[in-house]
Length: 344
Length: 216
Image (cartoon, rainbow over all chains, first blue to last red; front, side, top):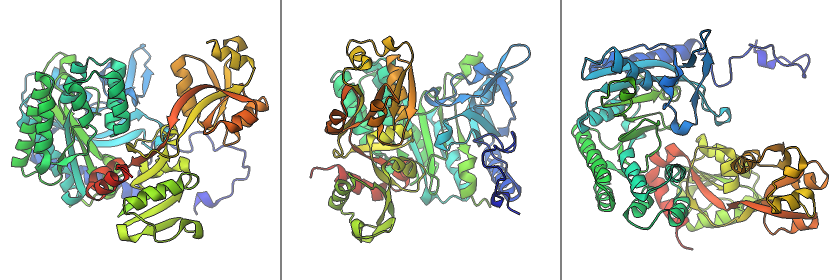
C-alpha cells in the first residue's frame, strides 16, 4: 500500500508534526543504506592503504570551532544553547574538528594523516535543493607544508573517485590557488566589499560583470589585467604552462608569484603521481571554505550536476587552536557520489 | 550531447538566431511543433523549451547544460550557475515605480524612502528576492507582496504602495499613471552554464560559447 495514493480525508489539514524528517534530511532505507556503507568501506580501505587513520569527532562542538567553516558565510552551522548557557553547534565541518584535535591532543605527532566519515549539518537555502544534512568522507594531512603534500592529496582525491568505480574519463579535478587571487586583491587595494564582488564574478566566470567591476573600481595595472584573466576557462594540465606563464608575467607582487610557483610545483608533483587527463588548472577556483590559504580544488564526476568534493590547503586554521601547523585536505560529498558509485 | 534550455516567449527568436550562428540549429520549427524537446542533430545538441523563470533551475540541477535567461531570473532564482556571456538582447530595466503624485513617489524623490507612511513600504513584485535585497541595501524596511503577474495593477488598485517590475519602454507604467522612482538592475539575456557541465563537457561547449559570444 503506497500511502501517497491515499486521498487525504481533509485537504485543509496538515500532516501531524514529526511525520516527515526535517526538510533537507532523509531516511536511508535498506538498499540505500547498504550502498552508502559499501562506498564508505571502499573509501576507508583506500584511505588506510595510503596511511590515513580514522578519527570520529563528536556531533556537537562549541560554536566557535566552525566560525570560518562556511563558504562566504552562506551556509552556517545549526546552533543551540545548552543548559549551561554555552553556544553549541551541530557538526558543520569535519576539517575544523580535525584541526582542533590535531592542534590539541595530537600536537606532538607530525605529520598526521587522518580521515573521517559521517554527516555534517549546514543551514542552507532549502530551495537550492542542497541537503541540510550531508554525508561526507575525507582526509586531512597535517604538518607538511611542501607542494608534494598538495600533490599527495590531489592524487588521493582522484584515487578515491576511482575506488568508487568512477571512470577517470568522466572525472575532473579542477585546481587553483587562492593565494594568487588574494595577492591580486592586496595589490589592487580592494575593499572587502569589492573583494567579495570580484570573488563572486570570477566564481561565476562572469567576464562581462568582472570587466565592468574592474574598469569601474580597480586601477589600471598588472593586478587588474591578472584579475580579468581569472574568468577564463580551465585548461587541461598538459596545456596549463602557457596560462601559468601569463599569470606569472602579470603577477603584481612576490606573494602572487610565489603562489603560482607553489601551484606549478604541486601540479608537477601530481603528474609524477600519475594524475593524468582528469587534472585541470583553473585560476578562477577562488571559492572555498573561508580558511583556505593556498591550493584549492574541486572534484567533478559525470552524472552529478555540481562538485562532488573539494579541498585545499589551510595553513592558519590550526593556529586558531594554539598549534600553528600547515595542513591540506579534502572531503567527498557522498550524497552526490553514492548514486554514481560502483564500488568493487 | 549538449542540452540547451531556451525560454519560450519574447527572447526565444533572438536566442535561436544566436545559436544558429554558433551552428546549433533545431531540426524542427519551434512555432509549428508542440514538442517540448527539439533535437539539433547536426550539432549533437537538443533544445528544451521552458518558461523563462524555470531556466536557472534546469541548468543548476543539470537537466540542461546551458541555458538562456534574463539576468532578472538568474539573480531571482539564486541558482548556483556560471554566467560567462552577456548575449546583449532582451534588454530592459528592473525598476521601482509608484503612482505619480503619491506620497511615496514624492517622498522617494526627496530621499524619505517611504518614511512618511509611518509603516513599512508595501511593494508588489514578481521578484521578492531581488526586491528584498534592493531595499535591504538601502536600509528601508519593506513588506513584500509576491504576485505572479499584472504587477502594475497592485499599485493602481491600492494593494501596494509601489511595485518592482521590468520596464521595457515605460508605456504600460505611463498608461496606468505610474512613474519610475529608481532603476534597480540593468537586465539582458545571459548565457548560463551548469558548473559540472562546464568541466566535463568543456571540449564540446567551448566552441559554442566562443561563437555565441563572438561578433555577429
